[in-house]
Length: 346
Ligand code: EPU
Image (cartoon, rainbow, N blue to C red):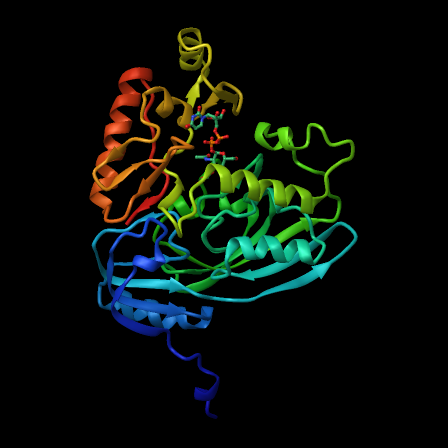
């Protein structure tokens, strides 16, 4: 019997590939071996070969949450698995299966076209579907973990495909099992569970303000449009000015530290988090230190949002990390709070 004709075409190899167009900071970076992964079935052979050779490796999605160095030795897997489909639908939920390489915002748009509201608060987040669960993307009061049914992945330690139910993914604020175990799973597909019952999620101040004068409850499409408008105003378009969205996480501190800080800085922006903890707006802390709109060589802090670091053109990973360190040191000195860098430093 000849199985060869069913075997997947191996992932296409591009040696010495420039990645400037594949990271939203627009950093010059050269991948020694870049592989275009278009189907999950390519992964067992590809990973075996990479691991047998002892090569360093990493997966690159939309490149919107990474800091790339000038040289990326070993194998870089360009995640291009496409496709989305409705798997099933009952009176409570619709399940949809989506390839890891699908553009996140295009998926959000598609779900609304299919009359499946729920993801509208997450419109216009850059990046791919496969990257979304890794940092549990969130915006305007919604985190994607809430809408995930399961994740299909290739387990590089066990050399087998696995399906992780939502509970195994350990979703938390900008965190997940995948982020905690960086070189174990390669996400190939995400199965979303979209409840049939829909209610608008407008608790986030910026969004609530948009509809405060509205006599009727907004539709999911109206929320989608409002989110796109807010994001376009606040966050720089990576096609125009290089950036990776929020550069730092909003720090979560114990209530004892919060109590001292709020006494000293009554204007400080914060939100109650899990019991016993408060989340502080890192953008406010950085802004208070006077960094908003500054430049340091070819990089700087965005003028409309201090949490976003930008590359004005010829910046490198070294430049951005230098600026980040200056900001971290000053924020620590002023507020005693350590800011954690959000994008992955490769
Ligand atoms: N603020 C300032 N000065 C600034 C920036 C912010 O005073 O320069 C204050 C704002 O006035 C506001 C508060 O800080 O009261 C929070 O700012 P914002 O509403 O812009 O949200 P954020 O906390 O800075 C987070 C996410 C964003 C997400 C928005 C909306 C993180 C690290 N970032 O930003 O996510 O879009 O909320 O939900 O949690 C991303 O992760 O890349 C990202 C853009």
